[in-house]
Length: 147
Ligand code: FES
Image (cartoon, rainbow, N blue to C red; front, side, top):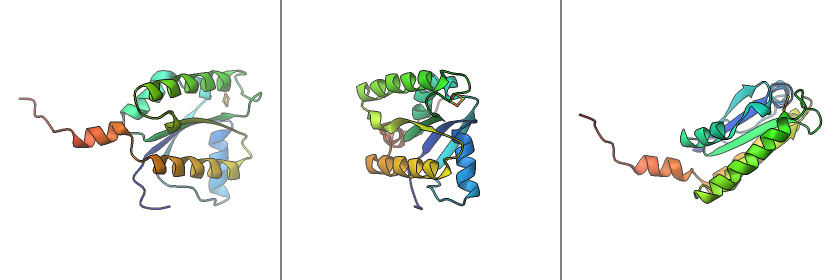
C-alpha cells in the first residue's frame, strides 16, 4: 500500500462517513495513505464546482461519502450529492477524464470497516487508471516565466 503516486480526495459528511473514518482509525484498520479527507456538515454541501476544482487542482480520484440513504441529517443532502456526482461523472466522461474517477458512497457512523474497504477499493481502481490526464498534461507543460 505504500509508494503510491495517485492523490485521492474524500468529501466526507461529519455525521456518518467522517465518523466512520474516525472509527476505522480507532479500530486500527488500514487503508491507503494517499488520501485526504475534507470534512463537511453534509454531502449536500458539495456542488459541481467543488468536484471539478478537485480534479483541476490535482486529484486523481474523488470520493463523496455521505450518510446512508434515508438517514441524512438534512433529509435530502445525500440525494442531492448523488445527483451532482452523476452530473459531474458525465462531464468527466465528456472531457476525457473517465467518470470512474468520481464515486459516491453511503455509510453509517458505525461502519469503520466499510470505510476502510471502500477507500481501499477506490484507491486500487484509481491506481489502475493511473494519474489524471490533467496531472500528466501539467507535468509535461513547459514552464513560462512572465516578464
Ligand atoms: Fe450526512 Fe447529509 S448529514 S449526508
